[in-house]
Amino acid sequence: MRRDFNKQKEKLEKLEANQADQEKMSDLRSELDSSRKREQELESENASLKQELEVLQQRVKELEDALDSARQQIGETTVEQRINRELREELKKAEAKLIELTSTMEIVDTQCEQFRASLYCCDNSLDRFFELDAEFVPHQAANPSL
Image (cartoon, rainbow, N blue to C red; front, side, top):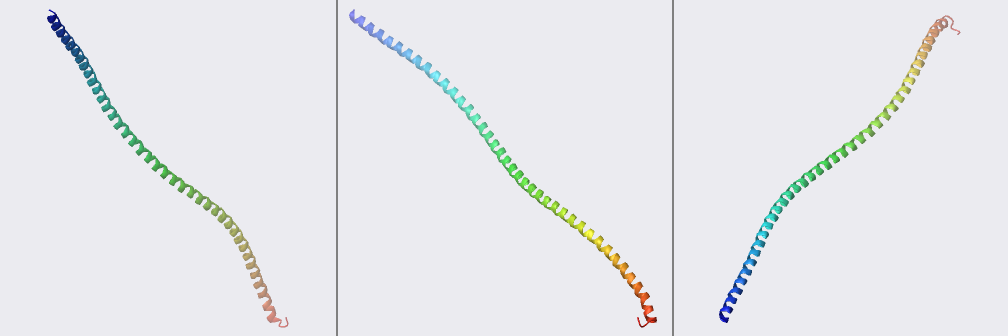
């Protein structure tokens, strides 16, 4: 009997060990399923993050292009502003020259009027001289002593 008892005890221990192994197997299977599920979730999240990264990289490229375009426009605007400033300076110089030429023209116009008046006076004096000379010359021919 003792032998039977020992045999039964061994069988029971084996069965219990087998049952413990089955529980461990069940736990391991459960853990494996959980790990697979977690792996799928992580792969899904990884794919989502990769897609988001691509979108963000595209957005960065768009922003860099916009920045380059803005810099180019700023450069063009700066060139336009420099040209505009140079043209304003030239305009100021031209306006100053115009004022100077207008003043000079007024002086020349005044001098021309004075010259015309002097010329008119000279013409009148010359005409008067010739008139007097014409009057004097016939008297001189008649009176040679003069």
